[in-house]
Amino acid sequence: MEIPRDVSNHLFYTAWVLLLLQMGKILGSAFYYDLVVLIIDIAFDCALILFGIGIIRIGKENIELTHWKISSILIFSASFVDIITIILAFIYIDENWIMKPLILVRLVLLLAYLILLVVGFAYIKLLIDSMENVNIINRKGRFLISIGYIIQFYPYLAAWSNDWVFPRLLPTSIENTALVVFLLASFVLIIGFLELVFTLKILREGFIQENGTELEEKQIESEND
Image 1 (tube, one colour):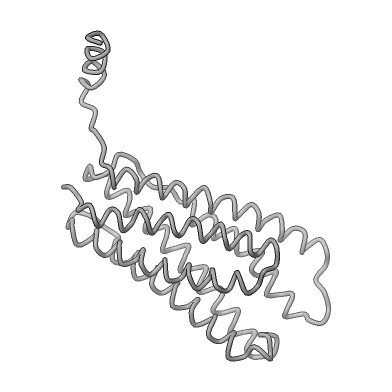
Image 2 (cartoon, rainbow, N blue to C red):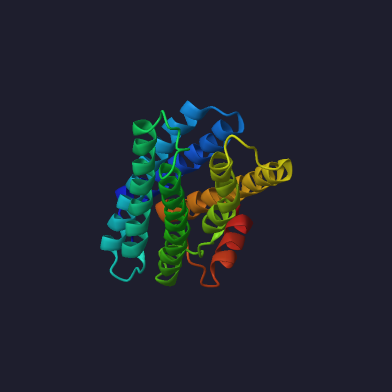
């Protein structure tokens, strides 16, 4: 069953936006541009919501597809959790999330956000697999994005712990290890979003099923030339 062009475009271009914003988050964090990262975080959450809407649209277009409901719910939930975190950060900016019990609330929101992203993108992988099963695309998904967010648990928790022990400092070994793990997670996430973009490019442009005659047809065309 062919997916309408506007639905495939919706997912393809939103995935591109997610990729670019993810790269922006990495660069902003690397250069400690807190305000820039905050703006990009909000834009990323909005793009996630748009991507979730695209998942719902494609799920309704083909009843044979699976996992689209749960994946969209998880993606929406992750966006809303992060938006709530940002709002609370603005409300309690003077305390800087360091005073109890706010820092514990921040930990709960942080863990919930990462878990929702991990599970949500895992279900998106399964959704892509169901597209392959019904011959909408010709490749299966991968768990790269989910793996990237799993790896991010360590640097995120290290950053939270730095506020927890404030004004004392974490051991240098933990901070250096967190930086290396963050760079590794960033690499995996970028590769994962690129994989998602290329997969949705196939959805957008369609693919030719090979029935054993395609190669012969190409050979005949080259001989005629």
